[in-house]
Length: 268
Image (cartoon, rainbow, N blue to C red; front, top):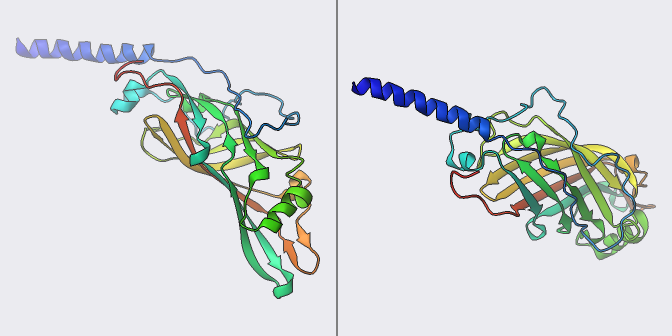
């Protein structure tokens, strides 16, 4: 008799897990538009659509089934869509370029500049992260600091005209190669594809991204490489003294923080 009751209870348990998995599917979130990183009035953004483009890569799963991920954190967040916002004081955009010192026999050196003036939001869909909705990411380029006052002033006023075009915009349109076995607290490697706007010129760029979800925070790093010529930007140079080779590596060390509180353990 004991074995019969044990079998019945096992079947009921499986049925409850199956029904719970079906009822936990959440609708997709609407896109969010992030606040600008400065109060300057931005130029019109030549982006055709604010919606996340459907993922075209066959390596990305259409959904992530919470039943197959038996971690307490994942079960408690099943079916949720939560908004995360960039934390400027914990995020940094860095550019790296190579300059040639003509007056020193062509010696090369790396120039690095950075800023914390970033803003942006996105809504994470825990059941299907590739279906998350993204807002506009903005960076105040006028605040970039390379540790050389004269060089930074030349970038703002002459070479890159950051004083006239202070904001860079990035609009995420596609998530590629998101891991099938998405689990919280484990580093995830994937790509973000979208439109980058510099000086009113927009080009598609791909960011190689690593992210880690830890309860109410997402931390990681995203890297891309762009050519200034693609944005109609002349290469900075001082005849006979300095030339800058094209090819800029842009890196963002980011922290996003959840804006809504987590539900009670086991809730939805």
